[in-house]
Image 1: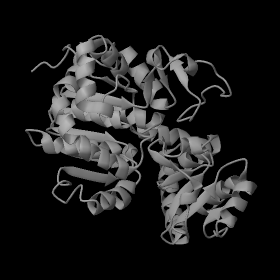
Image 2: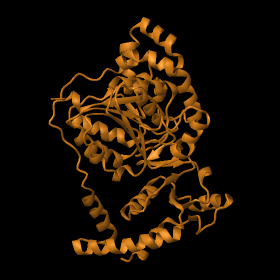
Image 3: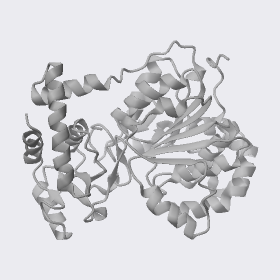
Length: 426
């Protein structure tokens, strides 16, 4: 069946049609939201909007990229319970906060049980390495919730997942994008902020057309959609123009849903099903990327040299894991130095469990799918590498927390990178 050039899925129709289900879910939704306690990541009305889409769209599988404490996870699992068909929820994130904190809290309050969790496949994994082709095999109708940040994640979504979805019914929801037409004039002045400088830049935002965002994947998505002549649909615009233009509908929605209703949304969606194709996709030849970085670091060009380096790196990983003594690895600082260090570690296939940073405006966000957390969350289970110009101040901060240099953290980023190269054997 040809699934191209179809009319777009009706976001406003979903919100309107599912209002009775949402109303019946209202009390539990509020209780779940209070338990997750991460409203800054997904507001109450966004829970309702996204649940309405899931219920109306009737997917075979819901793929969630980025989870953190599990706002959207709760929404999607609850929706899957109410569908008339079997629908798995596959959630992929580098963190295990949802499993270790949210699920026990929800169970303690009697909001969920093990049966509620049955549709959920909850993976603590690197999105960049996940086998999506295997996961999506046989799935004909896919709802993708894209809430993991960064250009590298975008490369996987647009270059690896979208080619699989091109021949299937699908809908992609992108969070953390706002429609500037409905945000008020106060958002346009720079004020005290500088230019947006890449990745998830906190208060610094960019404006492209009517899209306002702080996350890098928005730029990648706009590039992909423009090249393929695919429309990016603003949920804000749809709700304002299709529901907001009808006073009777607004009154009904407010009476039915209370704070579960809003014309604001702060998310967009798209589908290749609305375009003709043929489609073009970015190249995700990871070996070529790895080869460029390795050549830059080690001056290696031949396949034999590359294999020799891999063997040396494997020996180094073994020694490094022994030194970690079971601790999780984190980077303090998510600027250029922190991201450079993350790339070095990724080439060594050493996983980074978290970024830590003193900028509280960025806490709870992600950098390329890696959670960005408050320093207060650092304990003896972590080994932290400082990657910041404020390394002495940060080292003093960590010492004041009872952490020991050399056991729980390393102060000098440059020295540590040289140690990695030296120990790995050039």
